[in-house]
Amino acid sequence: MSRNPKKLCIAMVGLPARGKSTIACRLRESLEAEGFTVAIFNNGELRRSMLGQNTAHADFFNPENAEGVRIREGIALQNLQFARQFLTTGGDIAILDATNITRARRRSIIEGMEATPVLFIECVNEDRELLATSIAHKTKISEFGHMTFSEAFSNFEQRIRLYTSQYEPLGFEDNHVILNSLQNRVVREKVTDDIPHYARIRDILVSDMIPNLYLIRHGETYYNQERRIGGNSELTEKGLRQADQLAEHFRDCKIPFIFTSTKQRSIQMAERIARRQPDCVHVPLKELDEINAGICESMTYDEIREQHPEIHVARSMDKYRYIYPQGEGYITLQPRIQLGIKKVLYLSSNAEHIIVVGHQAVNRMILSYFLFRRQEDVPYITIPQDKYFHIVSTRTKKLFELKRF
Ligand code: F6P
Image (tube, rainbow, N blue to C red; front, side):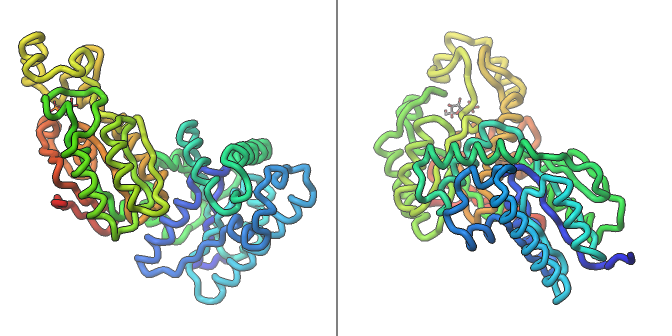
């Protein structure tokens, strides 16, 4: 059969809560920005619009539930037909957003698409903690509205187990990419046919997409007043005022996610901002915790100079590479912060505006992730408490602005 040279069907593959919809939306937004006509056909959305809350229970996804299987296969077929129709009526790229974890289902997509090539993109990610956070978010959608949080959570976990029992890895399919959806890294790819726009698509898959990230440092703490480092100090009156000013500043901007460290000072900031934001989710991540100063935690810089002059000297000679005894250094902070940024981007699922409330060393590392700085200069980047950084980083736009609030 001769191939249709311009049209493409992308079929997502992966267990629930592996980031498929986020990747599908990122592909659509980026490809549309390049002038393509793109549509997503999401089986979950179609199921919810047809059946409402009736399908939230895990039993519905049991492969032994014949009625459930019949309904789910019917929905998949329906979306396949919608996608074909879209491609024959002017659409360029149709994205089938569903688990598509069995070979039989994938074969039916290839056959159903006839002359249009199909590219399978599988999202994998086995980070347990991230999965738990993603499931917790999913339980908030209206489908689970009639269940308690723990009922919804365990039903979703059970749903994942049921899908896992039927999972058949990609391999036989001619055109497929396996993507680590947390790291934006291609784990394996096999592209046999001439897949239209493949280079562009691959590029989108591995790029970070940050529409608007507001990088904030927590306000003044009692430790800041005494020039003590680390610890878990609370915000002072002035710090709380700074939090309220920020909350006021962002009042008219819808912020669906605020990410913080697990330290009180950044959590207090987030809580104050979130109070003025309807439907704002606060996610504390330990990856965003401030540098651990080991045996120097809770000391002032003067105390370190007096009690551990060797630490003071060694650190001033090479601040980036110096590692505090029993603690961290900028150099060891780097992979942790990188993972934190990836988690932020993964969990915020293409949200238009997100806030990260970090710390001095943490924000230096985050800034250097987006903006090149020589390593030796990173530990000296100024991170004020009365200004924040507005960062935009997409494939077509980079913006970096220091703003006062
Ligand atoms: O002083 C505040 C603080 O966040 C400390 O907790 C941390 O140890 C320090 O800044 C990091 O900055 P520097 O690397 O310049 O000491």
